[in-house]
Amino acid sequence: MNLSTFLAHHGLVANPFRAEEARQDDVFARIERDFRHPDFEKICGDLSRPASAVVFGERGSGKTAMRMQMLRRIREHNDRERGERCLGVAYDDFDGMLRAFERSTGISDPVRLLDRLTLADHMDGILHRVVPALVDRVLDDPARDGGVALDLEEDAARQMRQLDRRARHDLLLLQALYDRPEDAAMRTGRLRKALRLPASDALPLILFGTAAFGLVFFVILIWSLVSPPESRIWAWNTAIVVLGIVAAALGGIGGWITLRRVAAARRLHAALRVVGRPSSSFRASLAELGSEDALEERLPTGSDDEPRFAMFRRLMGVLHGLDHAGLLVIVDRVDEPTLVSGDPGRMRALIWPVFSAKFLAQEGFGVKLLLPLELRSMLARESNEFFRAARLDKQNLVERLTWPGAVLYDLCTARLAACRADGAAPISPSALFEESMRPQDIVDALDQLQQPRDAFKFLYACIQEHCGATPEESPSFRIPRALFDAVRRRQVERSQGILRGERAG
Image 1 (cartoon, rainbow, N blue to C red):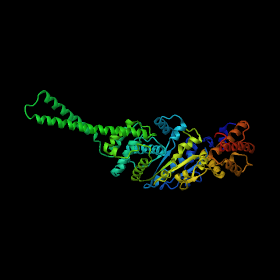
Image 2: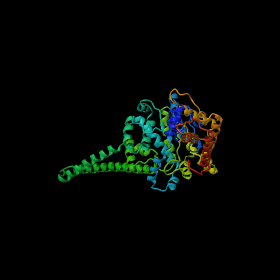
Image 3: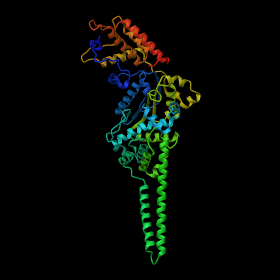
Image 4: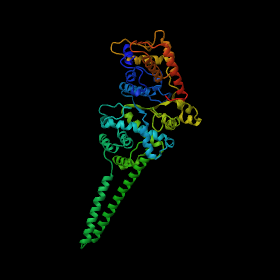
């Protein structure tokens, strides 16, 4: 029997259980606002006062769906609470970050490379996600990152200009360090003008003065050699000496500023290992900041965490001026980068530096760590020193993201409703099976599977196998119990094998 015939009989225009990945699931997009995990509110927390949480879940348990729903919740919160908005950012695309890190360190071995990753690199990576999106809004450039939930006024540049000079300078400094490599140097000057900050770089004036005094020095010197004055030769010689000294002094100052700026740009290129910007780009941005301001700032030119915390404080100050009460970072997909490829040891090396109490407990800042279940046992084996440093007792910890069978049943019902044809009567999962089966039988089966992806696989397999075993000329639109039980056994064995690590998902 054709699948479309079975679906049409039940008033469905599409198979509700076909998709397995939330990012490409159009059915999920229709129900995400109305159906969430029972622990969603606990994990999401109060967005006016962001806090950290650690969630472990198997593949298919809904971590990515939860990340998407949290970003939606942040946008809805920002629409209601105009004075206590929250900037939400999905920190989930690690491939680009790791490629830049690999180029910077020159290490090709994935294990050695991930072992070199530090908290400072993750802080740089987060700033590298947030700052470009903020600058896009201020410069009215097209937004390129849908994983950042940022809500500013319609005229963001005007809103920024109303901030005090320190906050505007902080944003300019953050842009000069963490903007996108391809257009960062160009946008520093544009942002400075948009924020109405004066050009404070003395180097062009110094270089002009050096050239002017040097030119006059050479003209008078040559004139005195070709046609020496008959009187007051001491005055000519004094003028030549003074002009030479002034030109040399100005040239020395200009050269010193240039050398310091080049050195600072090289140190930034070496220190900001996950940003991927060449030193020439940093040098151009430092020139827009001005030599005095740029070189007196404590730039993150080493591996120390403290300059990064200072950058986070600058960012939080800018956000507070823009009516944002805090920043919420949602970490997801740590098993997907090419260099990680689902290996638990590499996942651990990638994400363990984030477990720092000082980082997780920053004022107005929260991190939601949506982690694969394999990392839970690794965390349990950590030393007492690790737990003292991470202070996980202060974090909202969910040891395993599971779904009760009744909740999965309701979720499947919602998906059926989302695929219902216009005018068709609503149905539940039990309507797909023979009448001798009770809804509780299906709830019990889903309770054994515990994960949305496994539940969808189970129902999808039931439908597919029933259609494959039923002739078109004598169709049957109810799945028999025998097939239900056979598919149930296989799916439970598969899911338990995945949990034990004996097979892939």
